[in-house]
Image 1 (cartoon, one colour):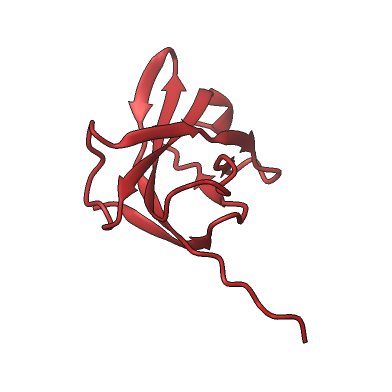
Image 2 (cartoon, helix red, strand yellow):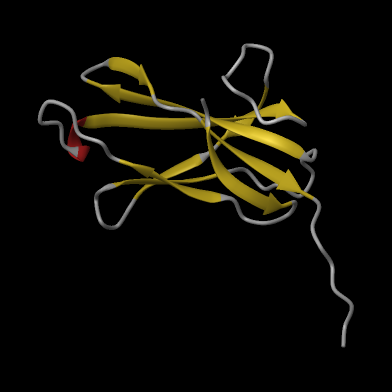
Length: 116
């Protein structure tokens, strides 16, 4: 099952935390590379990542200031289709690539307000 991170309006900045979870004494410094790609899943919340999901592009991944993980920022969503997007996470440790747990978010139409 893919974790739902929430809903965002089209055009908004989509940022999410990638928390570090140590196994067998690992430290954040042991992670050589963190990559996250964004894939379009369609109009229904996906249960898993599938090969037919359209690759939208890479997310920008930055180390968090508390050294407990990373912050990933999705590409600008101004022209994205409405629906669900999946974050496809990969970690490289000692030259080995590990697939991280996927997560999803829903992109909805932006709500506009009239000037008062």
